[in-house]
Length: 276
Ligand SMILES: NC(=O)C1=CN([C@@H]2O[C@H](COP(=O)(O)OP(=O)(O)OC[C@H]3O[C@@H](n4cnc5c(N)ncnc54)[C@H](O)[C@@H]3O)[C@@H](O)[C@H]2O)C=CC1
Ligand SMILES: O=C(O)[C@@H]1CCC=N1
Image (cartoon, rainbow, N blue to C red; front, side):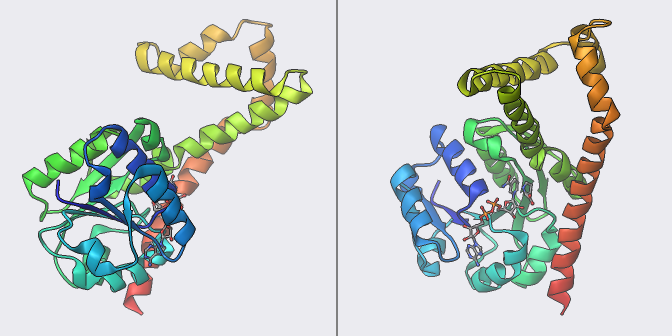
């Protein structure tokens, strides 16, 4: 591969670069990274990964085969306007922007482009992302293979219709944060119930890994797996009664719906900004 350019050097770019390099599909010196103005972060990435960094747009785009758009949606209009003259029909543009539609990017770039809109998650850093990919008509079969390979090395991939991406964002793009939120609660409880922090952390992580593997390997329904932990009159039942009294399951359902709605709102806000 000639060259991969990352426009944006935050959590998502970091997770993807880390995953890509672990799988040795691109040499670090072929990865070029830029950000808005955080020199220290670029230096850190250079040291950690051996990637190239620059603020010279000519340098970053020269001969680039793949361009990742990895800034926040609120910064994307300014960023795309700045880089549009360097974007060519031959490049594969991979956008990980939540909510932002493929045609909004083309509209802003003022040209047709080969664009893949991807929704990964930060578990890409450990090869466990769940990435949905929506592909426009300008993307060649070879580019589809390439993008599937890249995201395939950092987890599972699926090609979806673009309209499904808001739901994917609410469910699995944001998903790791929901699990961390739950984990934080488990960690906070450890102290109150008399466990040492490190021991508790180890047991929480193993419990999550074990439950995830059961979900992945067992043919049983999720509710059945839960029932098998819940002895009548036992500890789990007592605990889950409290969760039910707080409406925790409904809260999670509303959380995912709201995150999905926010993805749609981000897309609308982006479109509205383009039209003014
Ligand atoms: N963090 C996550 O879990 C996920 C994030 N995403 C998407 O990835 C994108 C990036 O998110 P994060 O990495 O979390 O954000 P972040 O805030 O950690 O990083 C954003 C990066 O964009 C750079 N940037 C801003 N304006 C720029 C410009 N004009 N030119 C060049 N670089 C510019 C910033 O300097 C920073 O390096 C977002 O669009 C988000 O929707 C998608 C899936 C998961
Ligand atoms: O919170 C966000 O907007 C991004 C998109 C999915 C995960 N993080």
